[in-house]
Image: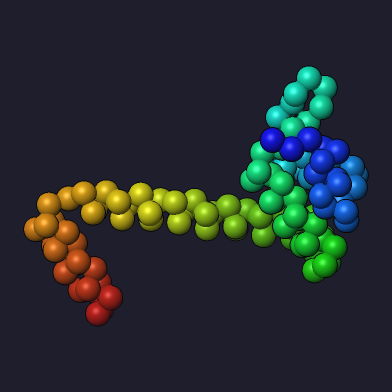
Length: 109
């Protein structure tokens, strides 16, 4: 867990204004430890990404939200595909072979 102060120290380009704006827009989701925000590793990484998008690439808030939403969708799809692959891998050999044939047929269309 990372405090707001630690987050700002690690990412020198960030200011409290950045972080408060991103929290208000739902782009960062800290938990509270008493009166202080605490950030999970995923939010620390996201803060770094948000800083890059705004400072280095010049994206405005709306574009940043769109990019983050798309990235979240990609991560969700990757997780779901991984789970599907694991589920398929647990099936009997004949089922896995049938799925492989069906996928090959779909690719050839």
